[in-house]
Amino acid sequence: MGILQWCGAGLIALCAVGGPAAADVTVSQANAVAVPAATRMAALFGAERDALASLAPDALARPLRKAAPLSDTISYTEAFVDAQPFAKGGEDWSCLTKALYFEARGETVAGQFAVAEVILNRVDSPLYPKSVCGVVGQRGGGGCQFSYVCDGHPDAMRETGAYQEVGKIAAIMLAGAPRALTKGATHFHTSAVRPRWAHRFPRTAVIGAHLFYRQPGALPATP
Image 1 (cartoon, rainbow, N blue to C red):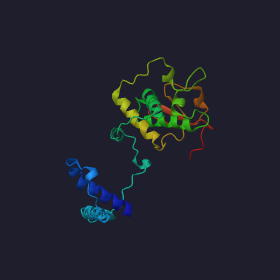
Image 2 (cartoon, rainbow, N blue to C red):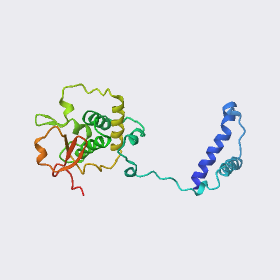
Image 3 (cartoon, one colour):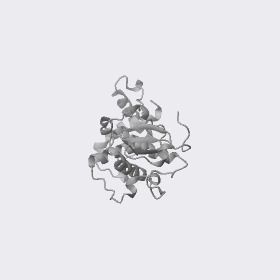
Image 4 (cartoon, rainbow, N blue to C red):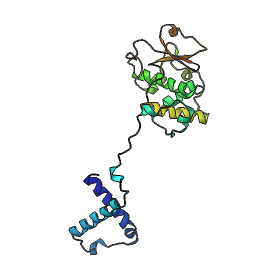
């Protein structure tokens, strides 16, 4: 432990010892007796010594625990997602959560992560808008890139459980989780339809009811 950390521990210990007394006694600063600097330093280091003595014998030798890399902690399971804290984010989080809710809430957890990959892959591509909200709200060709945007229905997310699940997945992906499911996919569709571009783009994955494709030239080649 460095000198600054020792001093910090000493200050904390000193505050802990002196706090209650200070709360119960009001001292007039105008009439306070000056305490010599040497006495104050002795009290400070004495409190530091007492604080260090209270530590476990091996406490100073223990290595700091490092957080596991995000790639090592992701599991595409309900149990993993349920165990994550729910925390709202900014505009990108809101737009990604809404897209996952309306486009993939009926899919497996892996299927929802896969749709999030498609959206974020588009954000990274020079062929698409540079934000999540721009990607999911993009229009063109007489329609919308994501069907819920143009279906005429209110975008109310009434299923609380589904909303919390996709909100957690959105936060995980925006935090930098690896995109390991779709091999750089930029498009997807359900097995019930066959869009015109499907025969021109290489298929990269099939997850649940969704088929995933990579637009040529949209992103650097994926190994």
